[in-house]
Length: 331
Image (tube, rainbow, N blue to C red):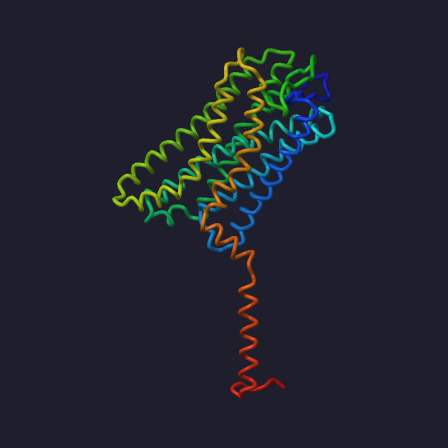
C-alpha cells in the first residue's frame, strides 16, 4: 500500500529572470516544433517511398517516432510552466512523466545498439545482409528494444512511487527525475538508489559496449578496402549513426558520472534539458536531410509536377494524332 500525503509536486526548474524565461520559451518552442516536424517527415517519407523500405530506414523511422514521443514527454510541460508561471504537477502526472522519460530513453539506447548491428551486417557481411536482416527479424529487434525498455523501467518506477512522500514536495528539476524524487521520500532509499544505478549502468554500458564492438569490426573492415574513395563512401553510411551515439551516450555518461554530493544540480539540469531537445532536433539533419537517398525520396513525394506535365503532353500528342487522322475519334 502506498503511504503518501502529497497530491502534487512542485518542479523547481531552472531559476531564471523573466526576460530569460521568455527567451527560453521562444527557443524551446522553435526547437520543439522543428524537432516534431523533422522527425515526422522521416516517418512519413520512410513509409511512403518504396525505395526506403529497407532495414536502415525502418530503424531510422522508429528512432524518429521514439524521439517525437521522448521530447513530447518533457518539453510541453516545461513550456506550459514557463508561460503560465505554474510549476505544479500532480502525483499521477509525475508518475506518468517519469515512466515515459525513462522508458523512451532506455528504448533509445537499445535501438541505437540495434542500429549499430545493422550497420555491422551491411558493411562486414554485405552478401548475407538481405538474407539475415529480414523484415521479420527487424520487427523482432524493434519489439525487443521496447520490451527491454519496459522491463528495465517498470521496476524502478513502481518502487520509487510506492515510497512515502510526507515532507517537502519541491523537486529540484524541470521534470520528475528519479534522483531528486528519492531525496523527498520519508524512508530509506539506499536499496532503490542502488537498484536504479545497477539497472541504468548495465543497460547503458552494455548497449554502449555492443555498439563499440560493432564499430570496431566496421572500422577493421573499412581499413581493408584498398581505395580511399571506397573507404570514405563506406564510412559515410555509418558516420551519421556514430555521431548520434557520441551525443546520446556522452550526455548520459556526464549526468551519471557526476559526483553526487559536490556537483551542482543546475549543471545536470541544463545537460538533461539539452539532451531532451537537442538530440531529437539534430537527428533529422544528421541522418536524413544530409542524405542524398532520403532527399531524392522526399523530392519524389513532394514534386508531382513532372507527372502532371507528362500527362498533359500525352493528351496534347493524342489530340494532335486525332487531328492528323492517325487515331480514331471517340464517339
